[in-house]
Amino acid sequence: MLKDRRVLLEHDLKIAHDQAAHTYLDIVTNNGNVHSEEYQQMRDRVTKLEFDLNMVNKLIHKGHE
Image 1: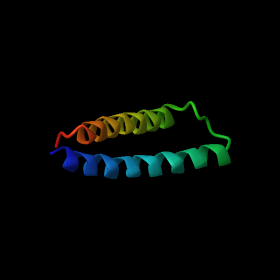
Image 2: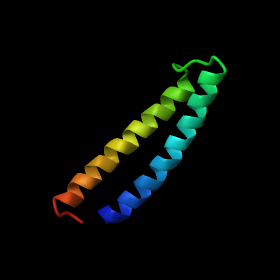
Image 3: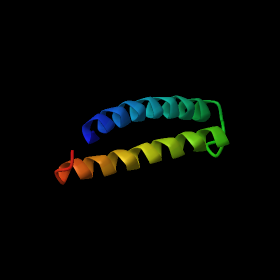
Image 4: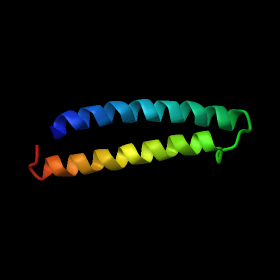
């Protein structure tokens, strides 16, 4: 169960990273605002996914499956 969750989190995290990177590039190349609500929400999503993935990996490492 945790290994399936890890695969899903890794997939979602890759998508979230790609979206945030695209938005960040747009912000810095067009004098945008890195404090915009849209970008902050993307950052929060990436942070939450990374946290969840870290927890899943730790549980798997401890022998939980």
